[in-house]
Structures are given as C-alpha cells and as structure tokens.
Image (cartoon, rainbow, N blue to C red):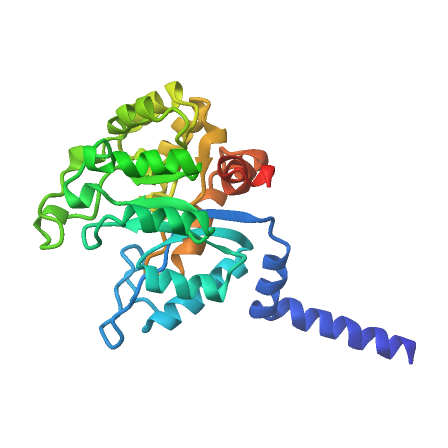
Length: 310
C-alpha cells in the first residue's frame, strides 16, 4: 500500500512538471521582485482592429480597455513586478490604480494629445498621494525640448515635492514627423544633453532619462558622469531594438560604470506580452552578473524612488 501511495505521488508530481501552465506558475512564483519604472495605462477604442506588435508581427490579444488592463496586471503578477510606474489618461490610470493599488504608482502623463496639467491640481494630487512621478513627459512629440521654459514651473514643483521626473529621450517610431499627431517632432529634441540646464536650475531634482537616451550614448554617459541624481530606464529598447544592438548599448553603459543607475522598464503600451519581452531582454544579457541584473530589475529603482527610506 505504501509503495502504491508513493507511486501515485510520483505520477502526480510528474504530471505537474509536464503541465506547462502549472510549471510556469511554479517557476514564476519563485522570481525575485522587479520594479517596472515605465508602463502605460492606455485606453483602447473598443471594436477597433488591435494594434500589431512591431517585433512579433502579431496583433494584440487585448481588444478592450478592460482586457488590456487585466492582461497587463496578470503579466505583472506573473513576473513578480511588485511596483510599476504607470502613466496615461487620468481616467484610465485611475481604473488601473483601483484594480492594483499596492502595485501601481501613478505618473502624470504628457504627450502630443494631452495638455500640460493644471499646476494647482497637480500639486493637490501629489500632496494627496495620488501622483507619484511626473512623467512620462513625451515633450519631443509636441515639438518641445526638455528645457523649454514652459516646463519650468513643473520642474520646480517636482523638486519642491521631491518626486521623480521621467523624460522621454531618444527617438520615436519611423515616420513620426509625417504622422498628423506629431508634425513638430524632431530627432534633435530627444538629445539627453538638453536636460542639463534643467539640472543646473534644479540641483535636487531626480530625473530619469527614458529609453536609455538611445541612440545618444556619449551624451547620456556625459550627463550620468556629471549629474549623480540622474538615472536612465531601458524601456522599449530592451525589446524593440535588435537584441545585439540593445545589449551593445547597455554593455557600454555598464562598462562606463553606470550599472547602478540603470532602471528596468517595459514601456508596455497595448501589448501585454511586451512586459515579458522586456524582462527577457535583461535576463538574456550574458555579460551581466546576477548582482548587476538584480540592480537593474529592482535595487536601483528602490534607491531612486526612495523606497528604502519608507
């Protein structure tokens, strides 16, 4: 009888190990924590054809805003992403926050289609703990540089309230200036060197350069060298760029001594699977030690956000 019981037990264990869904859950439940510094809570026009993932060529599995939210939150859970800085339209980000209040941190979002937020209301939202980051600031798509004078009161507020600022840097999708959304987009407006005057005027301001400042490697290294309060996230480039190109760029930042200033981000927009693709982009970097990967995935964000002080 004991032998029969033992045999049944072994068969059950084998079945579990052979079941991909169960095995995946088991593996993921043991993942160390991750912080995603760059996520979006966007609205889908229900009934519209789903957007095609630019890497896989497959349409998004999410067909409604609710599906996009629920599928994205499920991916965060799957990869043990314990905190995620999410930005998007206020009404949409509010629903995400309600669904996962302990996981979602709210970023005040600015892009070509959204006006700059009312300063008094933004201050009230920060004071109430409903906004945690100023960003993503996609100023480039509006035809604005990071050091545009109209941004000055927003940087002053972020410095006063001691919240981080996430600024879109680098480039955009092919053909962006020809898209009706963004006729004022210019590649030159994404140069990270344009944040220098902001840093001079606001020495206590914590800024992270989104998208790693790519492809402006030398300018990014220069800013990181001189301004220790600046970090960079690796969002988008960790899954959209060819893997060799991304690893080469990240390797240069690590070799330059900035491994403790790199932040993980997915830039999930309308493709929930992008979260896992972004994680894999870091995990597959053979030149990184396990300690360096933990810094990028978690430790650096804890330090940058001040979570180790709370």
